[in-house]
Length: 435
Image (cartoon, rainbow, N blue to C red; front, side):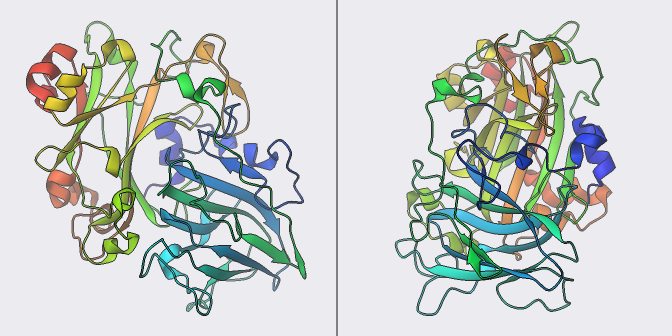
């Protein structure tokens, strides 16, 4: 469990910025609040940076609607299963806490249809019908039903992780492209999925190309050497629109350790990688329930002032060596060369940096720039989605133990994180940590 107050302190987000719908209250260009899915979030489809908030997964796309209903009302959601690693429908309160959810493998398909997250393959994308009921959540929920947990206003999020086709953010669904919402007898029109735009047209597109030229934020952050690692099992008090099907590990990193007297060049993370169904190579996603340890995992570097993501490394993008994955975080000038990364089975992620002309936005929509210390600190998030219940070293299972037992219970799956010099990493790989 990670209480909201601790998360706010760790990630340095003011309490007021954690409540209200923030940037989700404003429809995307060409969309209206009367439409369904008027807000779309993916760093590849949003040029202004306003939709890069709440620690999103960089290989995922999120669609949002704020919905209202009196107790007893129902919204019917009809959609098509995507060709992707994961999909889910979840509802949130105005504090960004999850109040109800249904994941892909929980959804019964329509009669005569197939749920590819249970059986078969994504070559046959079946359809489904889910109900959102405004009312208390019963002890035994009805099939294909989400409840508002007694609330009359909710944020409804539809998320798709890691589409089989990287050019299709919605997982190649067409009938319909996005789920249809029906309430009070009327079906809302959908705001169409927004297309991927060229990297040159987005602020996020070039944050991996430049070195940091900003300043130190006015408020110090709780960074340390070595970085402290926390395990957060998603619960109703976890903020920032978490997925009910995810669990997280997180830490804060700081550029103060890149300067004297420390003079490090990078942050290095190493862990044994869980097995997963490689849907990008043709595996069925449901293998995670029988032959794999998790449905999906990723490591992301994030910016804590804005809560935006810089870049993520998804499971199928990693380059494991002897079962271990190594990730290096730095500016481009301190990035190890390709042969060094290959020798240590390592992948590089940018710490993140802005040009002086760049502006990004926080959860409330307030603009921030280099003058505010954006990307001086970073927050590394390691997420696991739908761990196999039989895997005893998952975040979901270990998180139920006392905190003092976490690291030992996870064993090699617990990440080792620390600061390194470029020359030491070249010679020693992740063994440079702590030198």
